Amino acid sequence: MLHVAVLLKPYIELLLSGRKTVECRLTRQPRAPYDVIEPGDRIYFKQSCGPYRAAARAEHVICEKDLTPKRIAQIRRDYDELICGENRYWQAKRDSRYCTLVWLKDVKPTSTGPAIRPLQGVAWLTLDDAPAWKTPQRSRDSFHTKLTPGNLKNNTIYVGKVLEYFPHGSVGGATKQEAAEPLTLILHNGPTVLTDIVGPRNMLRARKWAPWFKRHGARPGDRVVFTPVDDTTYFVALARG
Image 1 (cartoon, rainbow, N blue to C red):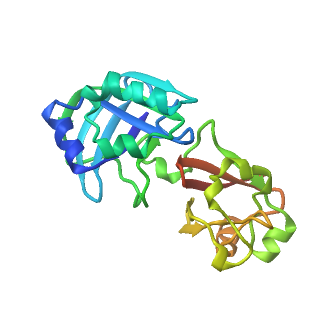
Image 2 (image 1 turned 90 degrees about the horizontal axis):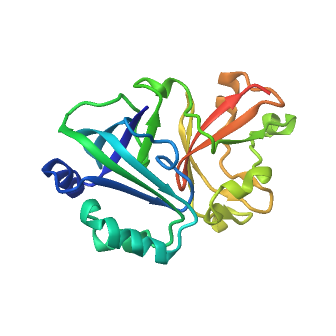
């Protein structure tokens, strides 16, 4: 597989200098690269808000779940000499539940990488191959909800049956004034939509689905498939029921 990892400029400089030899990703939910990266996979490192800067291969991978602040402190103690994480990074990640550690080899500078759409805040992409954006990313943590005749008529998507898969902070009240933190939904062959969830009705607050439904010929019983990218970002695709 190919991976695109976004790093701040100081971390890329440490990577290219040879001081940083392990990439650490800590998340509250099982997001890529957790449980999807394998030794031998190629990683392209893109500078945040900038170009591709480096490429490497994964030499060794460790994935852990059900982390506690104590365990994260142990990871910092044992591996930070290789990770080169700043204090504010570890503070921001102290409540994470999932960890991926990737030992890197064959690190080389590069100015090219896979052609991808704007990342919209996404920090890690896992691609089957370079043109993987032609189809939605698939992974074991994808989930779906079915479209009803009412959804197609009223331009809505209900998520009540999959509400547990979204962060609690994305569920708001009935009015726009009670909106919660937005989710970023990257629609396959469509726009990127920012929306929270209307808690009382268990539906996505945005009403921008009609053109997307029409473009893909959506029918009752079709599935809206969500594939997590990070804690608040999802690829969204349609699949026939």
